[in-house]
Image (cartoon, rainbow, N blue to C red):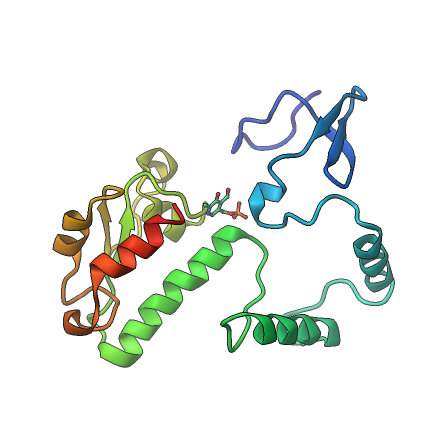
Length: 196
Ligand SMILES: Cc1ncc(COP(=O)(O)O)c(C=O)c1O
């Protein structure tokens, strides 16, 4: 197939055409079991009839509008998330990169608002991946994704994975976290590496 898309990704040699539940069929009619479930972030299965019916119904009422409006379905979903998670409020966005970008901005805003304008430093792992915006490729610490877009956002320090000593050495008065006496890098890092 002629590829008209920019070469951001190396596409798999098969082209998915339709799917149902955990099954996927390609353009050649070959059947697969989908073991990656939307990169594990929307592992809802494919084409569940309830989801298809809900999306079909909504698409016939109201599709896309500006962020200056809220809608009843958006508020209902946010309410469910607040009631069933740790969250007090919900920010909806369109991609993982946008969610991580928002999290990084929020960390800096929290640092500024609570501890001072100097609390800006982000510490991240070398060879991590957080998305493809300028901020998230910079935080990712993989020059192959960021070197062509310099100058990159400043105030980012990278440490190797699983190196608690390097993390502790990297934390300073400018890290956008609470002051050192109430921040325990070892505990935070140990918790985070469980999810890496
Ligand atoms: C760990 C991780 N973070 C962030 C992202 C970015 O998500 P998106 O492609 O939806 O922007 C990805 C995408 O693969 C990812 O694997």
